[in-house]
Image (cartoon, rainbow, N blue to C red; front, top):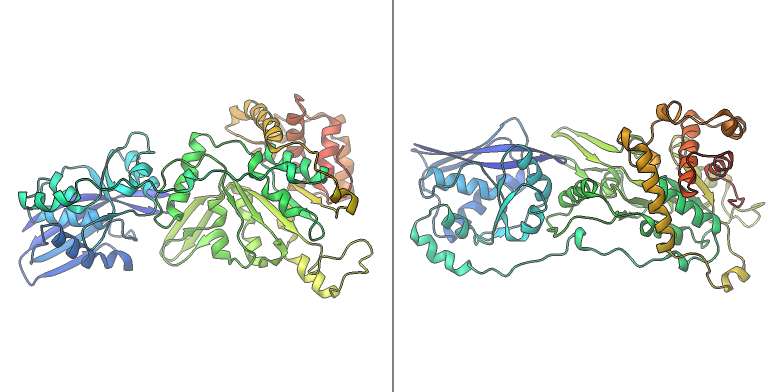
Length: 517
């Protein structure tokens, strides 16, 4: 009997845990036994491993082979354990002598090729945090693994190369020669994408909508655009990402880790530096929106939009349950999904941007004489946006239909680059003020801080107190007006909000049609 051990990483959400793979080769009826709560993909690794080992020059022993993934109580999923399993099995058979304290992350092809797997970035992060710096991955995952500071990455294209470096018999070197110079793959993952070229200069008119976008970008606030079809709600929304600053190192690592796990195995070549933009279709299910699925829950659009924008066009067409499922991450910035197989938490600090028509036909404006919807249809349509959800939306703007004369005029507004420069300056001012509390944007400031260290004088709050009673603002709505006011103050280079800043914040909070001053 011979025993060997290797290491892999098991991911539950973005949290990774070191998995010890134990291999035992013993006497008895030849068998391949896999223990440790493997899922279907991992169970199928038996045949992948047999074929890959044989086609690499060292077949598995024709004996009783037992492989255990420890801790045995943790559910294991995916094909990323293939390489660790085959190395452990051949080490137990004394065919190779792999180095200790190395994590192996790769899927095997039947021909022995090493294939990329999803979640390499969070897996390598988990390995380094657990004290294991040496990691072996597929060549296609090299760039992604090397994004982790402190990791010593070795990448291979074929199993025979791995076995050769583990002291395999010279017979393996004959097979290895066929794969010594693999073509270097440089796939384009999310980190390699360039931001779109959509610019605010494409927008005609809509001064209030443009200003609301600027405030939303500067403070990280949520925003609802409502109005008739064709007024420009979607055009405005699509230009918000161009106003946002690049992600810092910590944000980029966290965002890229989500995309690595959600990318379905598409390798990432660079950190995601631009804020992501997710715009799911209104037929998307709750699982597609917030994450889930069988086994360990997978991230959805809300997590993929982390540190970016989640845009829901035709928002009332989404199911009410899917929309209400966003209420919790809007407050906490985290999505925790509970399933029988385990609990997974994903970051979800996104900016929610909604666009909605006034009714299903879109013509319920003014006296509503042109609207063809029944009262029940209008009520059912608008009821999809529940009161508790709307209370969490910082700003609610009406986007009016432009006149023919306005449409015929040329756009004369500022470009996205000019507005983005002001947004960046406002964010720096906010960050300098909030850094002692570990907060980046005004939208993250807790209510307790607004009522204590950042409390405004009574004269400044007089307008808000009057408006609060007239608009029946909730405590949450009151705090959101104050956060908007601080953002407006930052844009105006004020040390703290003035009474005028608060008045503008109230206008942006309510569903008004007046111009912003």
